[in-house]
Length: 72
Image 1: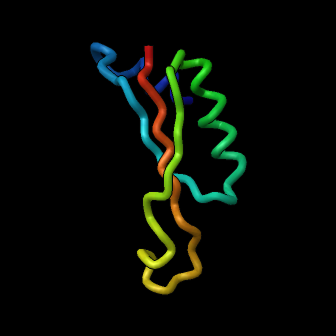
Image 2 (image 1 turned 45 degrees about the vertical axis):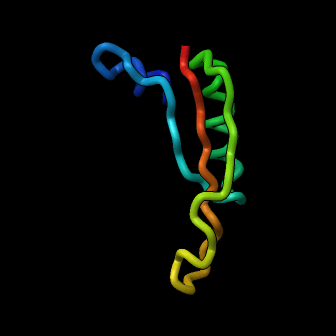
Image 3 (image 1 turned 135 degrees about the horizontal axis):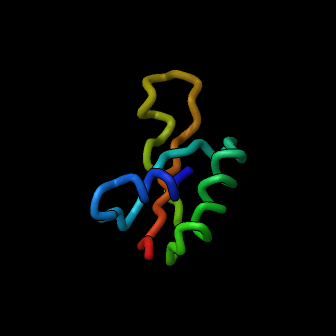
């Protein structure tokens, strides 16, 4: 999925990909983590980006930022 996206951009200037994922979304976390091998990415890390209080009292988990790159 990410490989196709990165390859479809003219001049392939994509060096990093960032997405947000909730902690409980194990399928998305696994998908993006596995894509690092296909992209020959140097690393992936995650950090809390959007905290629960940012969602105005809605029952929403924090969103974690996944940073993938640099893509070789």
